Image 1 (cartoon, rainbow, N blue to C red):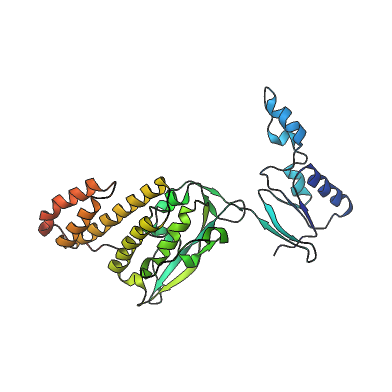
Image 2 (image 1 turned 180 degrees about the horizontal axis):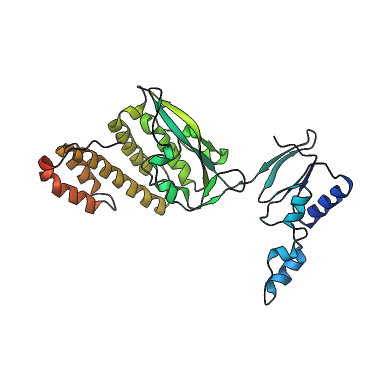
Length: 310
């Protein structure tokens, strides 16, 4: 909890004037000025005149007070921040810097048999590092500047597990769980949340450590990948998606068949590899890779075996 002697809501010229008045009579009291805009207090009547001029002036030229003034007088200026609740009796206020966010998730490390596994969850999702992001207005999060379904739906592994995520109530309302797909139950729920389209953010700092044990579904790669395939098909039939989101999902389904085929191809299980590559042909974006590997099946006896990591 942040404690301040004075809280001024509204970072306009009026709020700036209140800060000046407080500092005239109280040099040591702690002061916080909160405003929803991204700019420090400025003279609004001068804004239109400034922008219509032949050479528009930067907003700093029409500022009521400079950022240096706030720093010099120890005013805690919070821009891009909303006051969502005020309780006058208890002298409490709730501030929120990213009210439009639907959910956020954190990085994590995993352990197995008491040993920390190398890397983190985000290392399994290199796509996450390639997404366009911006720093959050508060804290150390990165806000993804894309539709969450387009950004995170194609990821073959979840960038954030349920136990390392926070969800706004509005984004969870109406979402369904599904019995019978326990190894991939999180995926079924999270893809619905992605489809809501509410912005998301992630914290790169490793915050959570998850212990894996012998009864965990992830100890059996075939079991989890089969559950993922089934879950993706259920999302396709059960969940209302936009045409763009459904196209993303169909490519993800095709990619999952390719992953299964690739695993059995390099394990020299020709029959199962053939089955998955044929299934992949029915989905967009997979035909070239599927046909290539089908054509290479007769060469399996002379190819080395590989043990996939998933």
